[in-house]
Image 1 (cartoon, rainbow, N blue to C red):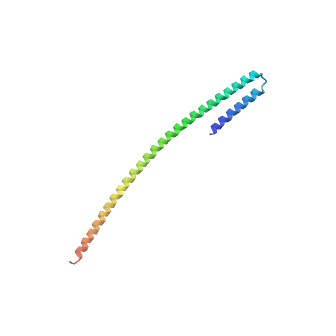
Image 2 (cartoon, rainbow, N blue to C red):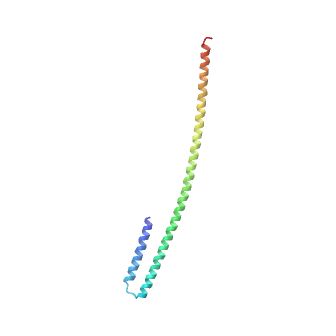
Length: 122
């Protein structure tokens, strides 16, 4: 944005300076009109060059943003997949541990029930 403002300032300053120089210099009407026409053409040319420069820079920045967006999206997708795999592995591990504990507890209860049944008179 600062660069655009600098271009505009330079362009306006150049045009104003050229116009002042042409108007203050002692010349005939025909020569003055020719100088003004050349100055106006030079201003148009500089404006076109500045506009093309802005278009080129904008296109370049848009391409960089697009490339960075693609890169970040891929990194996000990869990290999300990694986290999902880790969560799945941890869930499976916890389920196996819970099943083993449940089996262990059930066996302990069964053993205790058998023990109590053996001690109970019939």
